[in-house]
Length: 259
Image 1 (spheres, helix red, strand yellow):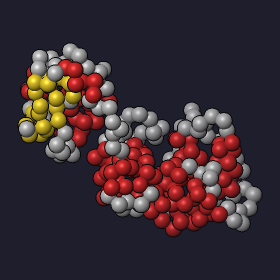
Image 2 (image 1 turned 45 degrees about the vertical axis):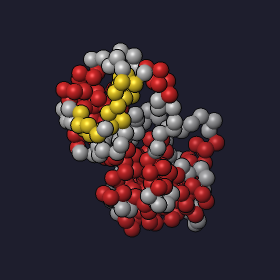
Image 3 (image 1 turned 30 degrees about the horizontal axis):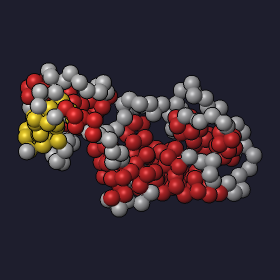
Image 4 (image 1 turned 90 degrees about the horizontal axis):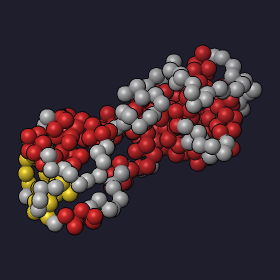
């Protein structure tokens, strides 16, 4: 039945949490952030407790409730046999991209990726590392804050289709970042990147196309922040009217800030 779990109740349940997976502190922190900000709606999911009081399912939500100091609503099922624990959480979780698809969004996977990356950029996570990162709720809200993210997702998809060395999500992220600075320059920059037409030697966009092509041929995976950083280096050179024949950006390089 639907129950309001208070931090005190959560702590009491957790006192019996003796047979469960290892706690993922990042997941707890993300859940707590959503609970505290009111982004944790009742959705029918359950907290499952065994007959002896052991938590079968819901330990991260309960830990988050204690951390946030905020109650949450859930279905609570108690008195289950411990044997059912092995059958819990065996399916694939629904991703942000899945949610966007169900909402009828175009380029849903790329839209999901750019929403997460832009959230990380705004959190000053310029290496796009595992923390901090957006929760599902925070990522799903991004198109409401920035409707132009749909255009960025489309641009990433389109350019990566005609120019495969370009990484769709990195192009979409850079497009959004640049769009906040100068929409007109952004349109011209990505039109040049898409076609590569009439770019003279020394043009920063030609240098970017060459670098992306080189990275595509590399046998090792290129970190996401390197791909975005290369776009920013080319963008900055264009904005400053500088020639650029080679883009230097390694995994250890500091992220350049766009101008």
